[in-house]
Length: 309
Ligand code: ASP
Image 1 (cartoon, helix red, strand yellow):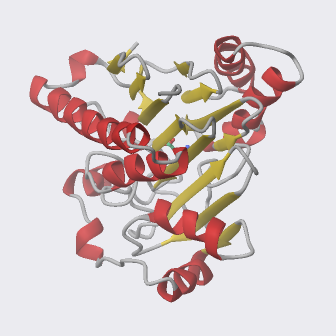
Image 2: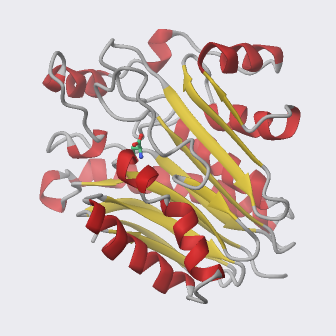
């Protein structure tokens, strides 16, 4: 079989072992493993990298542990506004949605935007109308309600603070989710899905649905999915920056990721991390925070599941 490779993340932030119970840690590991295996199996049975990243993300969106789909954080108005994007590296086609509510799996909608519309980016009520026209599953407010997320919001409700969900309190850590993959046809894909930042208002949108900032894929270089304080990732055009350093600067994946995350992003004041895979199947999971929920598996069956530095 030709090389296949996949990496996923569940958010980066102030993740410290001393703040996590053994049970919670195990729960995260199990959920990461489930999503990783689902994506990997898709690749191993001949599926495309697009299928693999979508399948892995749907697993993570359906878990309340992560800040995407079920488990999305609360906005300042007490609602959920979700963002997602997906990109494939062969034709560089992409789809993205932003500020959507009620859609069970935002990543599936982003893929439909890519494959079934003439557009790349749909937002708000229009994106929801498109979802209905595509027969996407919708869920009630109750489905998206999560007690811990609600408590996180209570901590900053009524203030001007917006918070990364997984850094907000010592006990409760969750995160934006992402996946990158290389399939046996040599094609790369990347996808990211999030509820954004707790207590966000004024229609705030982060990097996750923005092609080039939070998500990017190009068969000539790599596929990247980011997590962290979105404003900095937008200003640094982080996912594309990694690709550019490889394409124009001739850097290896690992070098490009390290330079972007540990130098260029830090210079802007940005905290977070990213996962990336290149056309040779190398993966990188790089972050400048205390931890990042992450997992990867390659063609040699080498598997990593990790949380802390
Ligand atoms: N990057 C996301 C955003 O700014 C947040 C995250 O990664 O958790 O919306």
